[in-house]
Image (cartoon, rainbow, N blue to C red; front, side, top):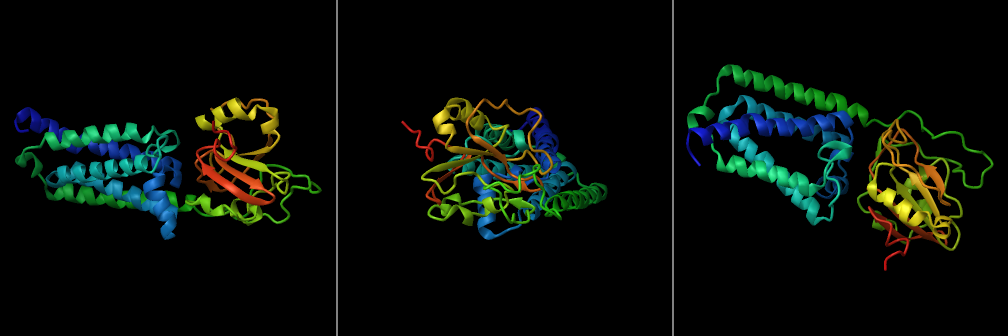
Length: 330
């Protein structure tokens, strides 16, 4: 579409609206400084399979977002092309999340991100707008030496900020951090907890099936192990106090005294330094054994992560669900 009004709309979209939208995502990532803000199906799983360092990847992606912002704001000749590229990439990533089965949280705007389909609707609408409303060639060509220098300054500042803030956040703690005192004579105490990594993420938890539970690295970091892990059947569920699915799981299923007595519920910390979020849902009365993962590690887990252990061996694992492994399906 051409015309003075449509050209102005295109200019505002490419030089203001889309850059501000990209900046919003970058700022949320910098605030949390956690790979949990990256889409799981399309980025985290692939990066984990390739052995990439997730904090380095996060810093790189944030730096690239600042590069895109600088180009769109200061280099008008390339603003529309960059806006099209970024929005197309966002839409493809979100489509990949939906195809991969992630319908709950894309991580795009931090811990409280909307579902991928909501973000896809926003990015898709912006993409359609940039395609329909094209700035005039004259407006797009206004690039001088000053804007180029300014863009370079913004790019370098974004690069320094991204790596300067994100990489230190991903360093492993000097010592293993626990969640409080543990009775030394208890039968479930881990005698030699492994030193915590900077972050923990597993893209293929299904690979645990058939292995003894003590060979699963997630358990090696715990200060206290779930009880009765060598019994005929035991369920271990890693949950978050801000996860709606986890809240429903407790109130609908784990308040049952028979099922609850077979479950160890392990709380996943909200962050490296905070166990339970201030806006956590209330814990109902339950017969579950309640434990927590240690602080000091960035636990990247799609809660609830449910593990069934029978006679010391893992027989079922699922992330984001508990129905299958607990045999609750109708």
